[in-house]
Image (cartoon, rainbow, N blue to C red; front, side):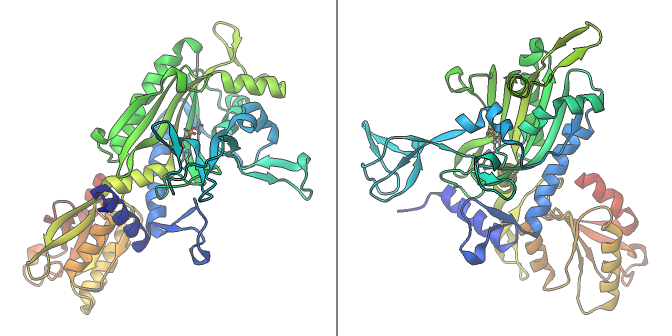
Length: 453
Ligand code: GAP
């Protein structure tokens, strides 16, 4: 069977991620652990750029949002109150023929007959509820009294710390609490590379507001979040705001949108933007007996705020960034013959390495010394990569393939050998246009920082 272009594209992306050190299989030398991934030297930079940018625009640039960093393990009572212990489940079906365990929505329905998507078998069990939380024990005894779970979302620590954060930050409604952190779900079928993982990170904001303004803030955050994805280089044409119909929404939500992206494997959710009403705070008030409310100084009213929650996945967004950036074009090789060039067209803001610094020749002490000096000059401002091995064209290709937007080359003109006026200038190459401009070394920091911020 011919593989579709999109399947081939995804295979190339997965292979590039491993080959160039973006993403590795977790515990690879032991055969891996399904649904778990490790980020290599480039992946960790990409991920960090994403999280830092999210934090910048969601927390630092907003007067009414503060951050927190909650623990992964919490009192089991949290998960009882939130409803996760009883209802955070996926319906699961077993295929008796090939023994595959499937999510019920993956079963194929052919003219009313249910079939296993793996082997085509029709001998399937009835759906059973499977709780997605990872169970663990706290302390030395492994019994019911010591059970808790790895958190399946970061949101609950925000709700249970609502009162503490409100008191210390002295914010007035509307205000938000943001958090980035790990979450764990024992997904029945992890798949599509990192898209559905068992361990992943979330970037969540709980935005507390008055009930009468809930829908207004839902619409506001949907637009803000769509802009965010555009600002990190995801094209608007590949983003979709899908309004979840009443019958599919969580019963407590008065409106939910999924922000979806056209991955090579199909249109899939990147983020949920949900108006969760006052459900979570009310649940914790009931279960803990503590007053998680808000006192309005002006009206002298006490009430439980409503919440709008934009909840994004770090790993899914990293994957979307890589899928969006992957491109192949043609460029001349050393002899001027056109060859295929693989290029990751990351937005400079997201690129793991912002600039490579390349002496034209490795065996010329002056070129090497000058290039190292430039590397040291840039390093306090951005992530820089110094490379002296191989022909210059090859070095450009290696950087194109990992998405480095700029390359500085130190050549004989830099040394002033051909023209004194060009001394202490370098070429600055643009990854996408492959055009080169000649700039003064003294201007490099300001030119580059303005292009990568
Ligand atoms: N607090 C709300 C919440 O957790 P969710 O829609 O279940 O809502 C939010 O998750 C986001 O977390 C998703 O849009 C997705 O980006 C990410 N996410 C959820 N499950 C994931 C998984 N198994 N692997 C990777 N990311 C996941």
